[in-house]
Image 1 (cartoon, rainbow, N blue to C red):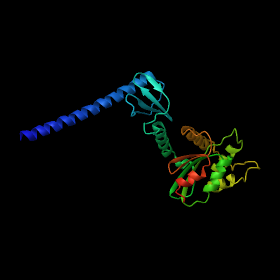
Image 2: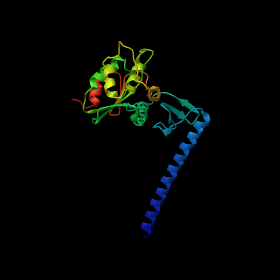
Image 3: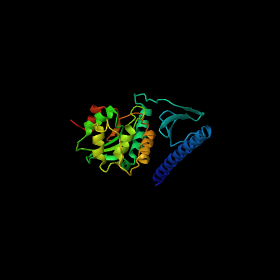
Image 4: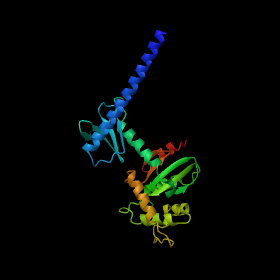
Length: 240
């Protein structure tokens, strides 16, 4: 009986020690987070977590990733593990995937109803975007969600063409016609009454939040593809 009681007491002490250690770690994390806030009051922190490097914390501030030392240093760079993993890139990809998963897809032009999801940020006058459109057009295994990011400095008519698509009664048909070049050599006239400015501005703001700087940018089944990388798109769609 004494041996059983001793075993129970030993187990209880071990559990208490584990809980105490966890509480201390949590308290320390919160203290360091508060230290960061005091040291850098203008930094908008969205997440704060330990890294495998003792004494260094990962800080997510919007789409940016920083590192913080409780000694009062905030630094930016790439953190690699000894086995060659870019921990910063992995965190950035996870952060971006989370943001993409929160996109309001009802604001996009939806094309198709297949099992594979493709989210696109595109420009109607971008030649690489047109290559992607031609490549994906008519695929029955894909559901596409198309957002517009017209690069007006390069393509002065791109904004008007995006508005034309967004104003159309049949957006899918209008998108195909625009990307096929139907309106390349004629004035763009929007069907009245139509004001797509607000929706297009929402598309632009979503692109900025995701760090989109050029087109096309796609997320194929949750994985990012930059540019008209048709081979990677096919690989992510599991095309033989």
